[in-house]
Length: 153
Image 1 (tube, one colour):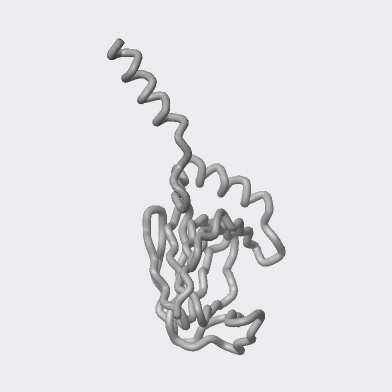
Image 2: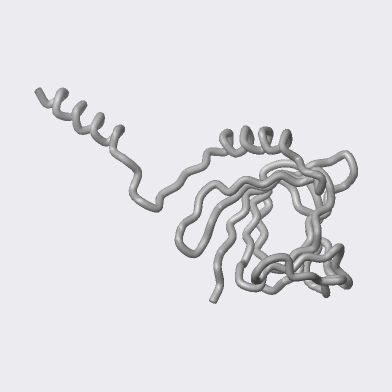
């Protein structure tokens, strides 16, 4: 009888729904999603997918096979977790020929006087709001990274 009660308690825990606001992305799932994104590369050599939005932040996955534009988010910090591939992240300095492309989002072709940081699998990056940044990917290479975008006051 104890075995049946224990089994039923275990089974109930197995089918219980996740608490609201909980999310889990297994490494294998992210790798598979990155492979699927590779088939969706656009003319800018990038593909992204928003995974979920939670209040003041959201998660997305990005795959690049070439240099990105310089970016500056006036109201969001970025956190990157490099899943695969390699590149250089240029941060700081001044954006060349900045243009506002949507509210609080600025883009440009490059960054002047920024600092290049090499990034690869397992690396974690935090980029504060209002900080110019640009992902650079060497010819013939690719990079896939998990992104957390956090709204700032």
